[in-house]
Length: 259
Ligand SMILES: [Zn+2]
Image (cartoon, protein in one colour):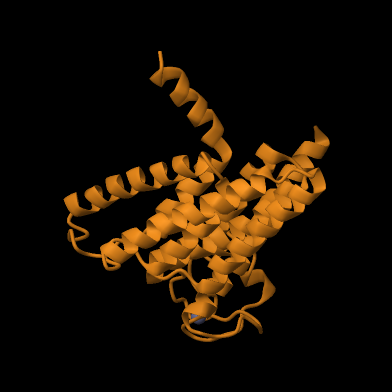
C-alpha cells in the first residue's frame, strides 16, 4: 500500500515536471529557439528563478501573474502541467511499473506536445511525429524478439500501412481541406501503436468526437463550416481511449451487436 502511494505520487509529480518542460519546449519551438538556457518571462524577459518554476504551485502562489512585471501568465501553463501529471498517474495506475510504463511516458510526452501545438498553431511538428513512429516501431520490434512472436509487429506494420494509405487518399482527394499532411503522418504512429482491430476503435472515436465538437463550434458560431479545426487533438484522444479501453469496447460491441 505504501509502495503504491509512493509510486503513484512519484508518477504524478514526475508528470508535473515533464509538463513544465513541455511548456518550455512548446514555447521555444513556436518562436524557433533552441530549448536551452534558463526559462524567462515572455514579456519582460526576466530570467525565472526556481521558485517561479514549480509546476502548478508557482502559478497559484503568484496568482497567475509574473513576479517581476505582473503580466498575466497564460492558464495554458498550469493546465498542461496538471494534464501531464494526471495522465502519468492514470497510466501508472493502469499498467504499473513496467517497461510499458516508461514507453508510455515517452509516448504521452510527444502526444501532449502535439495536442497543444496543433491546437495553437495548426501544425504537428515533424520531430514529434517521427519520434512517435520510431518509438512504437522499436517497442514492437524489441518485444517481438524478446517473445519470439512476430504477430504484433506484422499486425502493427500492416495497420500502419493501411491507415496511412486511407488517410493519404482522403488527403489527396479532399486536396488537404479535410486535414493536414501532419495528420496523415500521425496515423502511421496510430497504426503501429494500436494495431488491428484497435486502430478502428481509435479512428471511430476520433471521427465521432471531431464531428460533435466541429458541429458544436459551428452552432456556437465560433467557427465557419469551411474554417480549419485542428484534427490531431481528436486523433490523440481516440488513440489513448482505444489503447486503454479498445479491447473492452470491442467485446462490448460484439456482445450487444449480435444478441
Ligand atoms: Zn514578466
